[in-house]
Length: 185
Image (cartoon, rainbow, N blue to C red; front, side, top):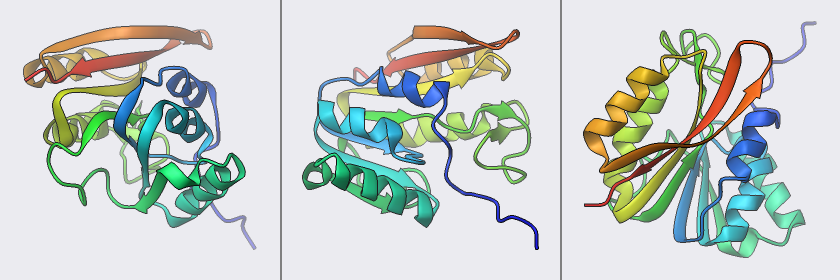
């Protein structure tokens, strides 16, 4: 019998990069909470956090981690597609370590972000713009293996300020970047 494919993203360099990028916030959302490893750091910086994942087993694992860290009292975990169930202007910060490799999302949604690696992130950034409050931030991880120029251009058309906040080298040919996009409207 073949091994079952896990739908929980394992903690990796990008997970810890997102965790290190946590901002103080009254309300925050994390899209794609995976194992919940970054969620702990994000919850520590927010008065209230919603952790979202499309996979129920990832949501259960995140909830378990939050309970073990005694942070479940100020965090809700929701099974949903991105930010679809939330009202406009609900959050001060939206975080995501999205699938960002250039390959079809349907092929492997834990890693593949679309043909150019940024389609998932672009769709999320549009959705986040409506869910962020006027002075809100989107904090998103991207890989230089994907078309980061297209992502930054897309963000620049929506958000008032976009900057690469931080980057780390992973492997010989890849850098992971933390992009901060400020709504500022």
